[in-house]
Length: 526
Image (cartoon, rainbow, N blue to C red):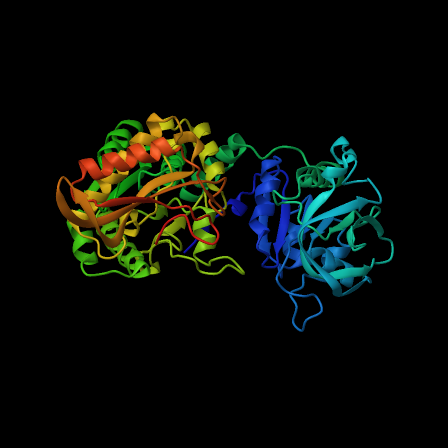
């Protein structure tokens, strides 16, 4: 299948390339670069210099890695990169790699550094010149390394050292090649945004051209170019933020030549399917089709308890239902869907990423369907998607809708999914969401929802012994869903939600609150 990715856009005037060596923060680097208003692409570490040079980047960043530059078969980039005249910034492993490749020395450190570390500035240019670094407390950073550069390459100056006298930053001002042993992209390096800004604007000469408006213009132009003047595109619409933004992009690009198919698996939140139908029937110029397939999905899930099996079944059924309807529409060449980057990385589709959970939309529909796949949001984080949606004029009711898993409430029902359990969870979830909304906390939270556990406990209702299920409430704060912290909700809110759930839903025996962050947990329970 052909994928339309963000990096396919040829109309972007400037870009920075990040070579990914499998570091845990590679996409966080990309996020920080984009927050600064500069477009960036994440490419495999072994991308050829010819390919890189062809894209004419303003700068190159070498990411971190769990590997050691001195181990056999250590990942390395094309050495021509260091002679190409393009500014380079190596981060952690990236610094060690460029130091070794350019004649420096890297050895296993006597004392490994992990976590928050202080550093002393040796040379302020170009990274540490801001007034921010005049405060001693500002000179701290986040380290994660065992190897260290013990000798800088010829022509490089030491720009900073840690409290352990480890080289923390190096630079060749003439070649515009720099290295940081620490991670400027993480929250724990308070001056990181200044360091990256100085590299982007002072070293690379970038401008702030990466905005929601520029993304929309580029995406619409590219979609129009790919689809052409007489082809049609079908959009898999779930009603969530991601697929909605894709739908509005298509609406702007090709109008009535877009067909929107809403496969309603019956696993949405209370009244949500009705809201989706009403909204998109009214707002989209193209044909909107609502397929009610609840009975089909519940039948396929009967007796299934394994969460990954649930996801596989729902994904397969989604494909089958969508296939039946889409192929009945006649000659449609393209399929658009709302895959975003957290979906990709959690499904292990990126170099170095472990499979955490399968997302049914990652990878698209099977080759035999004959669709050419368009995924305009595949490289975006959720908050970037919301900004793009605002630029497109999506209503706040959609943009502020909290993230919702593709398999829906099936992965919030622990154990077998039944119609009875589904109804119970929908009621409990609606009560909790209503109380959060009334407390005025909805916009402060990333997600908040109820989970129907498979635990049955003893309780008392009236004067009788009651034996029933436990509802778990979950609320988290996050910026991009890659990490999340449990929300410290007011006790009176939790008390009211618990009283309403146990009082209004006769079968529920108990309500508990989940205080697990991500990591070690995930946001969803399954």
